Length: 201
Figure 1 (tube, helix red, strand yellow):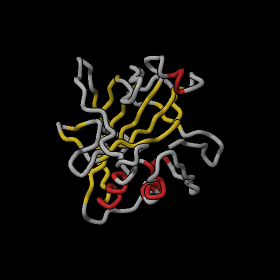
Figure 2 (tube, rainbow, N blue to C red; figure 1 turned 60 degrees about the vertical axis):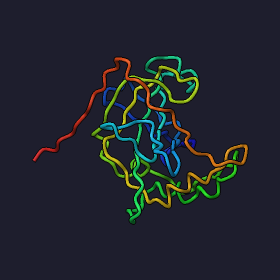
Figure 3 (tube, rainbow, N blue to C red; figure 1 turned 90 degrees about the vertical axis):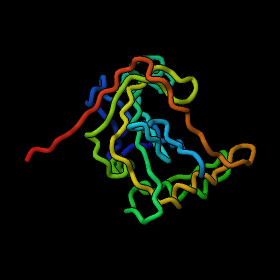
């Protein structure tokens, strides 16, 4: 999902938290599993989750994502993990996406979300000050070693009915588009840092 400009005419951006500069939000996409498989690309404490959202950001020093992925500090990706629940959960801006998934069941279809979404709403109300970060790669080809990952500690609850809508999307062969995640990779000596935020009393 491509991200447009805000109502003020600027692209949303992130900075700080160990990032090397200012990173502009370029797009959002999801990875999911199947009724039998957890679909997240990260695991916390050895546990995988049902769905993972990636908010892809480009260092503003570069003109395009293609150019940025050639630099070790070119990209930042925020990872948000979701857990499917059978009970009702509070609605958020994410429902603007989930509710429209049935209209995107066929491959190569697109749909415009007319209601503006705030970045905070898109992240499901998690605490953005608690996350894990490490230097890694894209999880889709060409898997460039150009990403500063920020994986949030909070897990977003999502109703099982919303999660199941992903499983009904179809690929170009007309088959269910499921298990579109990269398996967990070896840490390969990478250092993973944890940022905790404690409010002052």
